[in-house]
Structure formats: structure tokens, C-alpha cells
Image 1 (cartoon, rainbow, N blue to C red):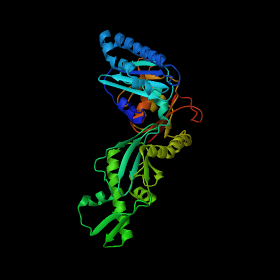
Image 2: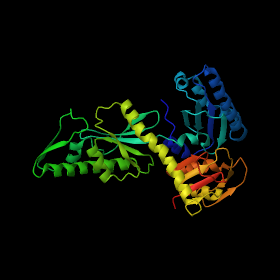
Image 3: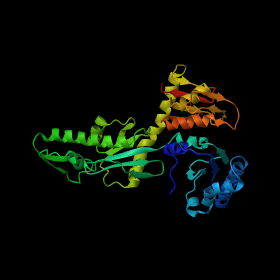
Image 4: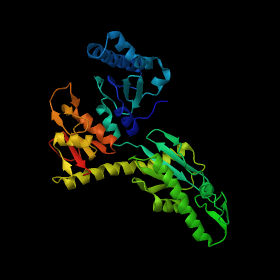
Length: 382
């Protein structure tokens, strides 16, 4: 099964070091009788990349071997059964990654010293990548979710249950804990016996339970800019919000005890909540840019946008999907120069990738976006 194309994949590809890097794109036609035509289009972009490699990077026989993993995909029946409207393949030294893309892509073979990801950037604008954290008194689970899939994540030191969390300190609190009857869906509560008032003890222990979960989750998700959605009963959601340090924890949550929810139900239910949030978030970013236009928090000067992106200062980037801007920028972003030479860096691609790497968002300019004359504009963090 191929990995989904999302921000995590972009960061992984952007951090790949070693050249040459081959980026292959082609349209596919999954609904018609075009299987052989799709194969032909793939062979054509691979042939084009091989010519570039043989002409500038290595000997012809080495170029053929370098692209052999991409050619092998042609013979994999399951690979073609999964096809969508577009195909993106990235080949590097000891690396090949292929993604079926839901949008049609123009055919292209690009060979440079890093992967060119600009053709697939529009897909990330409504990226439905997020994390789902399910909590009950009996189970805790963290999932990574995207438009098409949901997958459990192993989290070190994550409590398995309320009782597991309370026993971590091995302290005899003079209490016994059991859960309410299973039949009370969404209303499970720990029942405590022993010293002290039961409501106070229950509240204190639930807070500590959530605090320990948050600590493990934040260690796992450190640096993530993806939304975090809770799946739990209302009482647990309220306590978790009290202690959470996740900067993108959603106020809404998937309500109810999720102990026996299937992966399908978790995926469908969580998507219904997150999708409107993602769409609304894009509109809020545009409004923030428009409200700040003209002050030091925004810029549409190309070299300043690029250097700010490299330095991690861009919170939101807006780019013209049809523009071409070539130039040179050093690694720390202290110098950027426009050259107009298409053998140099695609500066729009560079700015977008660095923005995503640093947790910012990227938006293709179009109707409803800020009206600027530059092909690049940015909302800055500082």
C-alpha cells in the first residue's frame, strides 16, 4: 500500500539529501479504458528523465539503472489498480516514492539537485491530514488520519487506561477503581471507593489521567502543525482541554465512547468534523493577510518572501501557480538573488517547501485570495 500524499510526505521528500533528484508527473485516466495509455504516459516521462540524466548527470547505463525502480512500477498490477487522476513519482539514490494523486497533473520530468514539488502543492491547500486521539477510561489511542486512510500510531509512555495511569506512581491511595456498566454509552465514569469525596477524587484523577496522556502525545507530535481532534465523552473532553498544550487542539470533538468504533466509523466521523474546519482555516488566513496588508507582518517582495520562508518566518504563503521565478538562495536565507535562469532554483517551489517544513501553510492565488501584483506574498510570524 502506497503512503498518502500529505504534508508529512512533503517534509520527507524536501529533507532528502543527495542528487540528482528526479520528479515525475503524469495524468491518469482511471475511469476509462486507458490502462495502456497510462502506462505509455509513464514510460514517456521516464524516458525524458533518462535523457536528462544521461546528458548532464551520469553515463547512459547509470541513468538507466537509476530509473529502473520507476520502470518496475509498470509491471505491478496492484499499482495500476489503485490509480487516480494523477501520478507523482520521486526517484533518488536508494529512494523511490510513488503517489496516486486525486487531481490531474501535467506530464513533466524534472531532474535537479532536489525534488520539485510545486505541481502537487495545490493538493495540500485543503490537506485533510490530522490526528485523532480517542480516550475512554479503558482505552487510549492516537491515529494519523488523511483523506483516504486512518492508521494507529504507537506512542511511547501513553497510558493504556485510567487505571494504568493511576498505577504509574505505584502509590497506594486507599482506593479501588472500577468502571460503570458498559451499557451506558458515552457516560462511562470511574466509580471510586475509599477515603475522600468521590466527585473530588474522580475529578482529580481524570485531570491527572489527561495530563499524562497529553505529555505522551505532545512528545510524539512535537512540532506538528496538524489539527488534533478528540474522540471521547464530554466530561473527558472538558478535562483534556484544561491540561492540553497542543496548539492545534480542535474545540469540537467526536462525541461518545469510541472503544468499539471501527476504523471506518472513526475515519468517517472525524472527517465530517475536520473538513469544515480546514476549509474555514484557509479563509481565516486570507482574512488575516488582508487585515495586515501594508504593515510589517506582510510582504510581497519576492526575495524577502523567499528568505523569510527559508528562515522559518512565514506563517502563510500565497503563490501564483502559473508564474515562473528562478534565482539563487543560500542555505540560511541571508542572500537571495533573482536570475531568470531556469537552471537555477524555482524560487516559488523553494519558498513553498520551506514554509511547509516550518509548519506554515501554502495557498495558490486565485479567486477569493489576496489581490497582489507579485507572484509571491507572505503573512509573517515576526
